[in-house]
Structure formats: structure tokens, C-alpha cells
Amino acid sequence: MIDAVGAFLLEAEQPDERLRFHARVAASALRIARRELLLGEAHRAAHAARLAKLGCASDADLAAAIREGALDDRREEVVGAIRASIVDRLTVSNPRHLALPG
Image 1 (tube, helix red, strand yellow):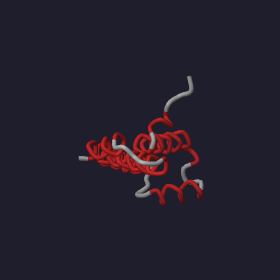
Image 2: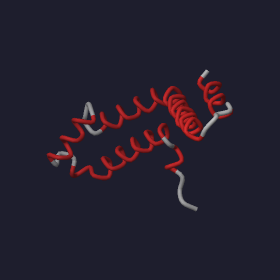
Image 3: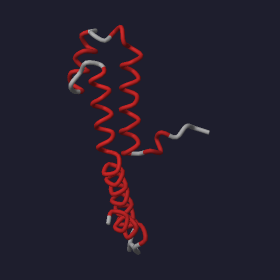
Image 4: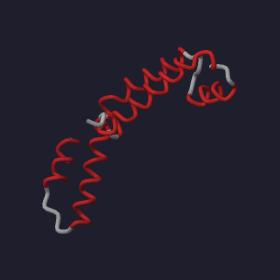
């Protein structure tokens, strides 16, 4: 259903540039929703596992531990967990941002 509506938005004749722009934005939002449906649960589970490995139950706990210096001796692990979470979010919101410049 998401794919069909997205295709309609991109293929339907739009009478002016403003409507074409809004159709492209709506189609983009549908692509994000589709990726969230496909990947969201796995990403949430992976993020929870990364946090648990660091002894944190939430992003707020991780931020507090970082501020307090409680994870200073695990810097590489913290950076890796944060990096992986950012990659997961970009994979859903805009995977083109993950492409390396050629």
C-alpha cells in the first residue's frame, strides 16, 4: 500500500510546481515510513542491546554516564554504540547520507 501510494504521488500529473514539490515530499515520507516498518524493530532491539552492554537502560542513562565520566575507560565502545545508532537512524531517515563521496 505504501509503495502504491508513493508511486501514485510521483507519477500523478501535478498542475503546478508547488504541488509537485509537496507530492515529492509526501512520497519521501512514505519511503521513510516503509523503511521504519521494515527495520525499526530490529534497530530498536540492537540499540537496546548496545545500551545494555554499556550498563545503560536508556539514551538518557547513557548521556548521564558520559557526562559523569563513568564510561571514560570504555570510550571506543561508547563511540561505536553511538555510531551504530546513528547509522541505523540514517538508514531509515535518509540512507543517501551514508554514501561515501566518490
